[in-house]
Image (tube, rainbow, N blue to C red; front, side, top):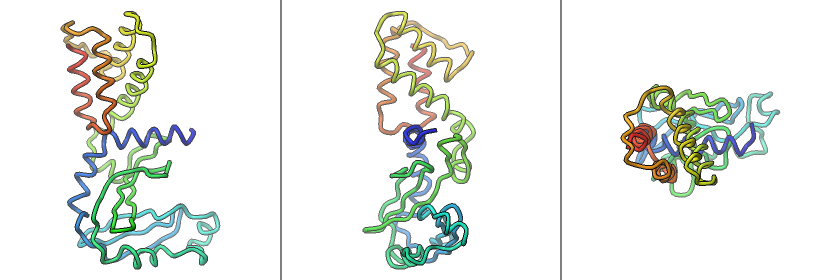
Length: 226
């Protein structure tokens, strides 16, 4: 699986879950002061950060093969604990936002002080599509199960936007969207909108920077039934 595909999966994850996950983390971290860190080296140079009575996992950077073998940070690099003590410790977080940044392996809740940040891994593997950690705990089963169908509709509606606009083509894309999200479920289709108008409205939904997964499912269902 290429990096572009992983990045697309991470960006789509942020689109449909970003607001809910930020709503969970922001009151726990914004305006709060980190006080301690414990550092370990495995696949990542990582750690656990204490903020008040809560502890949060952190990823600092990928570890080199030598660091993984030795189980400790390279002496030539600035140690994670040094970075934390110098730039993060006892400085309140001014902003908390979810982003994949320049990574293609994980989605992060980025906690920013005035000039620096630390990254809390959310728990989403863009290659396998597996949820873990916070993503599994915070998102409901229904929300997690929507990821693949909604991502498929995102692909369908982008293909539609570049297709010819014949009546048969419009109906085909509408049916593909219905099957991706609702399978064999019968919808109460009223026939008030053409397939072109339905696809146009769904395209507009997917053009939003962010839209909650459950809201997106509901709105697609409403549009298909019109």
